[in-house]
Length: 240
Ligand code: ZN
Image: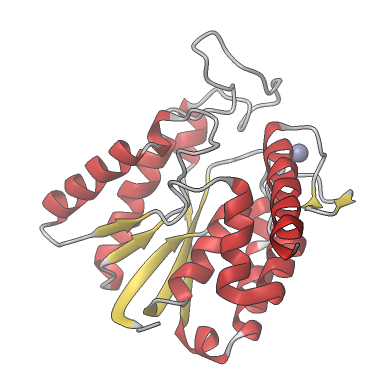
């Protein structure tokens, strides 16, 4: 694959999706920087796994090591203060009256992308890579492709600089995300995603399943477990 000379900024939370996005970007861009947001999320353990994932990723491939640049952490206490959701408070994770899970933080991705745009501008990055996905998502309206396209236009106009938002996972499901990891970096990358990325909303890393660590029952764990099972089944079928 040809490597673009540009710099890309990856929204890298330490979850399964953003870990695969980081690998995707390292495959394509000459310099790749990472950013995460600390907004008082319950699953702050997600942020703790990030340095190890970056290290492991660099150890997988010499080119990736050379291209992996700075890491940035942006604290958004204001977002926690204005949100009353199950991700930032100790309330039950369930479907609310509006049909959205109580984990929905209104406007979260809009705010993330605005900050990422400002950072990208300062770092000379023309590309932003993010793991939003419309396929087996929880219905969050700010994960939708149209929302992302609108943000790309808003950032490009508002910064007077061409910013391209890449969402490589937009139209694939969790099983295909595991498959994409394997495509990009073979078994070593797949193992890294399973072992080191974190999805569980409750921040549990004491239980190890074949799909990784987590409580096993929250929506994020269920999605990841189902995706992994489907991926493994498809792999077996393909081998026959
Ligand atoms: Zn969980």
